[in-house]
Image (cartoon, rainbow, N blue to C red; front, side, top):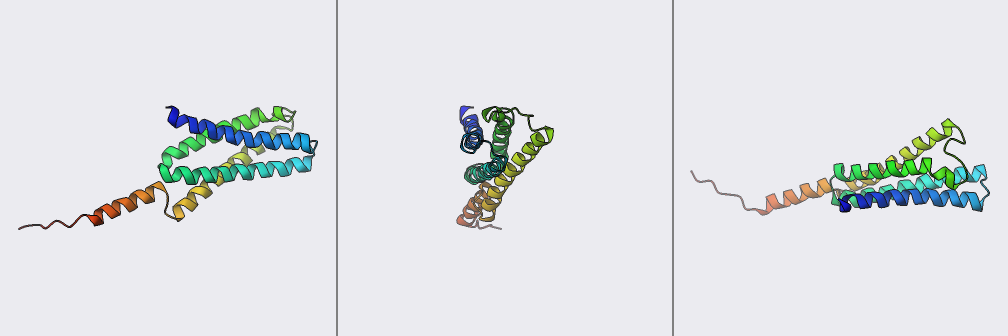
Length: 154
């Protein structure tokens, strides 16, 4: 149980840590300037997408898609919940301080960049034939060709 859920928790923690760093840099480095805040949010979402693309490549080589896909989805949902509900308190606000529209746009942006990053990583992995399924089919084909053909007697 620990071997399955510990990496999920670590991934969720890393994704939330990216958000915390972006919020703290914006708060203390730029005095919460709205233009810099938007740029830091975009940079944070890009970093989250790149992290998830990397995770998809690493996990997609070792495990079938249903297993690592669920793990990544749970980690993203946990990190998104922390980012949306706990993150604003770090930067000196509340979750709904900018309105409901900003709240839901953050959910959509997080989901889009997280899903896009994981999808990009998995598509690259599949395109190069390095995913779990392609490797298993390759091993199966090699073992089928390695066995000599049986002679049938009549």
